[in-house]
Amino acid sequence: MDIYIIDLFVIGFLLLIVTLGSGWIARLPLSFALIYLLVGILLGPYGVNLIQLRPDAKFLERLTEFVVIVSLFSCGLKMNRRLNLWSWHSTVRLIGFLMPISIFAIAAVGHWLLKMEWGPAILLGAILAPTDPVLASEVQLSDVEDKDELRFGLTSEGGLNDALAFPFVYFGIYSLKDNNWENWFKQWVFVDLIWAIAAGIIMGIVVAKAIVWIDKRLQNHRPADELMEDFVALGIILLTYSLTEFVNGYGFLAVFVAGIVAQRSYRDPDKRNSQLEFTERIEKLMEVGTILLLGTLLRWEAIQAHAGEALLVAGLLIFVIRPVGSWISTIGDRLYPATRWLFGWFGIRGVGSIYYLCYAFGNGLKDELGEQIAWITYITIVISVILHGISATPLINWYDRNIKSRHANVNPVETLVDKS
Image 1 (cartoon, helix red, strand yellow):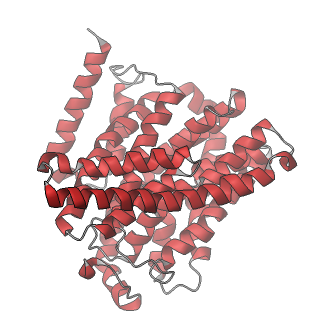
Image 2: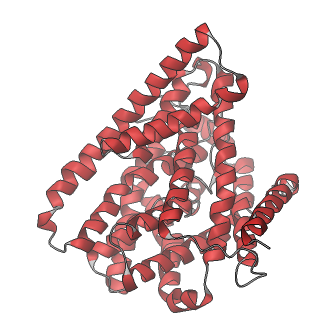
Image 3: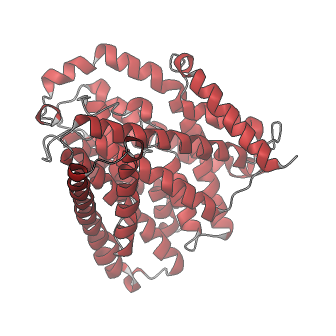
């Protein structure tokens, strides 16, 4: 029988089981990502060997790229606070302090303990530092009316650090091609740091505003078909991303900004909620395929060969770098200690890291160094999915019962929910 037909059957059957059993699964201390990963392993070469697809790096790059941009737009749609530093104080600290701490701490581990050159070590840090906006739905904002500080911080962090890790990925890639930093450092600062970030922000605002303006004008004359109307969100995502990439800006950042702009531009709350539901459905569907593929990609020989260094990096990242970095980053913030530690724990790695890894493979990463970084990344993601998949539900339930209500009094923030 055609293996392609078998793969379609397996994915369809998994979707049906997960969907129909979602009510029971939600009660278990398991994330959906962990279930997809375990099923992928069982269906791969070390299980029943039903899925034999071995995607190349370019296919994985494109698949994960699409999943991430949809998820980033969804994160942007959930951002319900005014654009000032106080309202986004958690985000500023997580992006401005925690992300650089994570990148350079991982790089230090790679350089001093794994004996990498600084360039590849920084590349490893940039690949692993971003938290994942796709797999962390259990601990993120559920809708635009959720005002919780922990969920807002994690959602906005996931929306921004997948974009803002890109300059450091470029830094690592440049260093792979030329060890003499003086030859490319100025270009990296002015083009890949300043210009690309600025272009991402501007394009996210301009493109989203333009599409929403056109949508509103056309709707006044002849309303679109309700079934097709949600595709406006997909149009915003794809046009914002592609147009930003045309001008060498960061499309990830632009799409997140576009989600924020779209959420504020539509006065009809049903329109915003409909777009959010639509993008989340696409995100969930693509998540199944991506994590399923990750499970089938795992190879025991490679895991054995790189287990020691991967466990070192993953252990330090999950249990030391992220928690300690989060605590340092939130010094002086009026957050409960438990919340500060939860910021440190809920730093799941996933689809974004796979994208950056595949992007690096397409831009100079290869040979033994490529294998080393790849399997450190894969194993770290697997460990993160397992640990966070088991702990997320009970920890967030505990937080909701004991801490969440206190933050509303300690850290009141202005939102846009009642203004819409």
